[in-house]
Image (cartoon, rainbow, N blue to C red; front, side):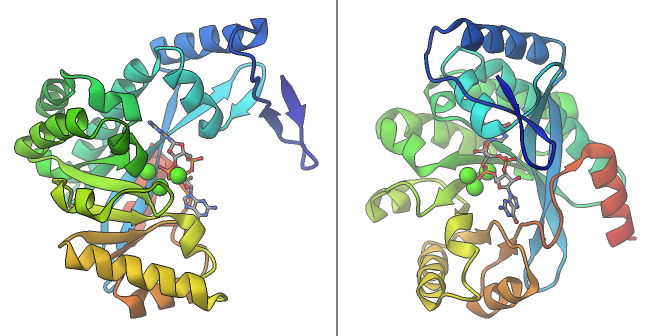
Length: 277
Ligand code: C2E
Ligand code: CA
Ligand code: CA
Ligand code: CA
């Protein structure tokens, strides 16, 4: 299942057969990793484009399999989604992320934390209650939590997800549309959703310094976001030229390797302390 790449990194190879023994073994290992809290949560800063102020961080899950090495989220998240494990995984990430956010805030940083939700989470009627309980336990105000959801997860069941989104919004939690541009949302629907933030997918952002068409797409997305009173975030900012273009386009927030890779919680706290004395 593990393959060693040219650079010597061992990478898990996905297995397409739903009931193959190897897949079932990976599911069992993932279940155990979640139960033992072996899944690590890393944090990537989100910066205000105009000022460079750190506004928050996105929490991203990491899994180091004891035998197969690093398994990318693009492999284990779908595995969790199709094996009933996404709920405990999401709750684990939420709990860790809120605890860390509480500690940054105690250090005096007015930060929010963003957590990714899988499509099926919006179908779970008790999600808003659980979120409220975890916020209370961590002592983090609802307004300091952003939940990131993809366009397609809302399109799967617009009516059902709207109920959940409205209840989360009523708690004061902020909602973001993730990977904007990759799904297909009707513009009318976008206007109806209680969302606060639009994240432009990195596939559009990455080449704006060299491709005028990508730049035009990002410009339109920023304008659309602003017309809908949303904060617009660009993800996948890998160099200074890209950042400069985003500043010119009036994109509110940026996130990407040029600013920082996702960091383990302790390293993130050091990064934050060094950046914001
Ligand atoms: P996403 O939510 O769109 O997260 C952004 C991805 O872009 C992350 O990949 C991040 O590490 C990567 N990234 C950040 N800056 C740059 C950059 O400058 N250049 C490039 N090329 N990439 C950048 P990651 O951590 O591998 O996660 C992949 C996806 O897996 C996420 O995409 C998200 O959809 C999912 N995911 C990760 N953690 C969780 C989780 O806790 N729950 C759920 N439901 N999904 C998760
Ligand atoms: Ca995200
Ligand atoms: Ca994204
Ligand atoms: Ca993505």
